[in-house]
Image: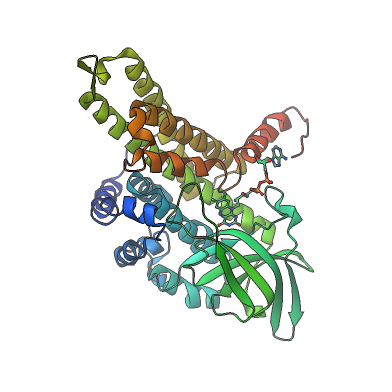
Length: 380
Ligand SMILES: Cc1cc2nc3c(=O)[nH]c(=O)nc-3n(C[C@H](O)[C@H](O)[C@H](O)COP(=O)(O)OP(=O)(O)OC[C@H]3O[C@@H](n4cnc5c(N)ncnc54)[C@H](O)[C@@H]3O)c2cc1C
């Protein structure tokens, strides 16, 4: 058992920090207030190889292991959780699905474009009537000669407006099937953008598929349910890493503020209530850190089970919500003001209880494993 990063991982981490400090820290607040996606930062991230972070070199990827990639997401989320989520959607949900399930032709066609940032990826599973219950997907796929036609509506598609490639799940004869749908596919309309409480630099859009035509060759091989589940389990680790990053930075900023803010003639850091807040959230973040790195390591070993993914995701969402809430309290009224960055962190962290599946659904998957040990079956 080892608890240290390799020299290479430490070097990557320093590189991620350098990038985030230069490209995200100075702009994140404005991007959030203007609800603008971080296009300039994504272009530079592509130059650094981050958009193909975990892809092999043959597809122009950076060939990072998942632990290093989790460090990337954690680091970006310290400055801008929106950018971390945009990048994780692109890498964990889309690029890695193609890498794992795509044909050689699909990998050669799409992965270099995704790695170069010439195309961003988006993942379209959720529908108006199919939220937690993904089995209720109604989008249909029918064969039409060499092509297929997709018909349905997809909601809350992260990167919806900026993507060039959509991984769309639809019900076909063989159950759930997945298709690679380019932005210019006939019959695809990227609908309006949903205004959101947090993650305001991520574009969430509705997709309309009306006889949307793509070649049969764009079907991503294998069982759609298994593919969607594997992608979401990988994404769960990345989202927990984002929760770790936003929590770490919240503590650092609140602790500094506590040493500077004078009330009753002393810095509030001298008050036991504040010390207790800081101690409580720090212990939680320490626990989350090891859970995230371990889960990322399990991805590298191809041993991540749905149970592990749900544990790290549910815990990460709870910790990020608790930490940002408490640290906002340390800032007092300033924490509530949009001119100070704590408000953004609090709003962004709140998303983690929903995006990537609501916490209640992850709790169900955790409990299912526990009860299964007693030969007792539970259902969602
Ligand atoms: C900001 C954001 C970004 C997203 N990005 C994407 C994306 O890029 N691609 C994509 O496909 N999807 C995306 N989603 C969808 C997301 O992954 C969730 O799966 C979806 O939000 C859950 O469905 P719902 O919101 O309709 O909630 P519902 O399923 O309607 O649930 C409502 C409430 O009931 C609870 N509930 C439901 N069923 C049960 C149960 N069996 N037991 C206990 N409690 C239950 C839920 O936990 C929740 O609290 C996104 C969602 C959000 C909010």
